[in-house]
Image (tube, rainbow, N blue to C red; front, side, top):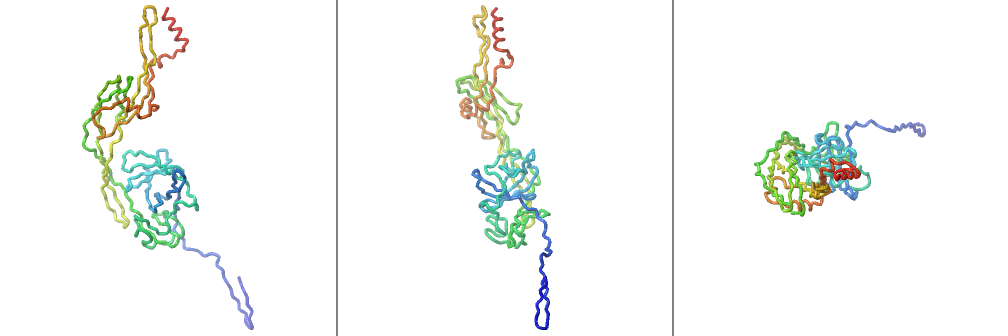
Length: 375
């Protein structure tokens, strides 16, 4: 834009240049993390979860940050959940690909992880709706991996202009900042399992358990061995009758791991982590109560109404687990009362009499057949 101002004897021309835009120094590209609310059953956010490349960060309402590393070995079979782990917390976490719903968690040191769902569940973060705020620039809550705790401190970190924690193209983490920040410049410690082995403890002597029928009717008892299904045992107990069974017991195992840890200052150290693995439930007792289903009576001439056959059916009474490992002691179990007290009779399938399988005749056919027998 050109402005001309006339003065006596002279003409001055001033040219004002307005810069609409200037080339700015190109900033490194960043992968922005996705943010999710972690809400309780009533829908109130209690934490935020941030999902970046190779990392998951949980921001609790206390200000604590919890880091989980990505590991595809912990993904669900169908691929609906992504696996993350934190060996210091002994925790494996599965994150749903949909970003909605509960997480799945298990123990990191469990050789056969048994996942359970969390009470809290995920939903997409709602900006401006309150809840748990991601920490402001450079804030380091206590306890912390940063240079100082609690509060503000640590080495200066270049401004990131409002970008929240993410990963640069080389996988390095950068902390939250709005252009003013100070914050931890180093990555949190990283752990890698170098090798792992499981050592069994000293063997345990078998337990001798007597099963007593304290009920009014005969019961069928089946002992299911989850470790060796082919060794399942079953027997029939009349009222007040007992049966002694010898059961093998599993010892406690020890898991030994050599873990390489890269500390905040870049040093690599090796640690041996030892953890006990309690034996899992091995024996399940399934109890059915015998009931008369049908009676065959000889009503032919000369048969004297003799009872030829009695068919029983096994009605589900209940099921219960025996204690694992050294918790299982020799002694006596009253199977009728123990099964009845579980309140899970509907989980035990009934055993029908054999005639229900072999005799598919209609009622009319059975009447005609009985008439033929009487002739």
